[in-house]
Structure formats: C-alpha cells, structure tokens
Image (cartoon, rainbow, N blue to C red; front, side, top):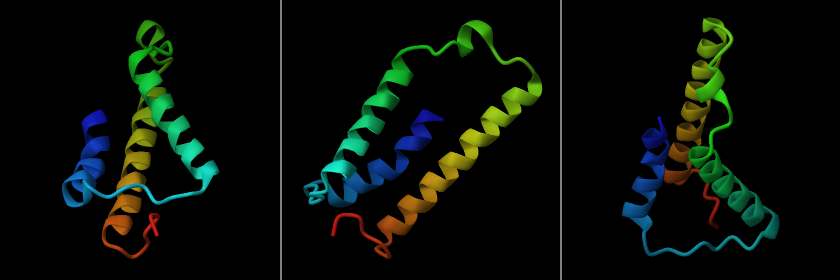
Length: 90
C-alpha cells in the first residue's frame, strides 16, 4: 500500500521535477515536514500491531477500510491539484 501512496508524487516529479516550492507559509511548511518525518518514523518503527495483531477480524477490516478511504481521498486531492483546478503552489 505504501507504493500506491507514492504514485501522485512520482507523476508530479516527472511533470514538474525542476519547479521549486513557492509556498512561503511557515505553518504549512512545518505541517508538511511533520507529516513527512512522521510517516518515515512510522514506516521504520513498529507501533505494536506486529506483536499483538488486531483484537478481531472486524478491527482489521475497519483498519484496512480506513486506509483505503484515506488513500482514495489523497488521490482525489492530487488529481484535482494535478489537473490545475486548484494549485497549492500559486
């Protein structure tokens, strides 16, 4: 699932690899960095699911469904961004 998360970023890099980030809002840049390093941290370090697993099959299904919904929402926002209807870099 992690690879699916990178698809919009790869498309962006291929289309706009030489552009620089023109966002000057410090809060937005800080939030972006927290998200980036938070994701890297959670990919590298276990948060306990490997050792303990899920309490039930329903819990696992809710977890997977939540991941899929959030991934689809992420793709929708990227699709809107890449089509130019709303540019965060302006």
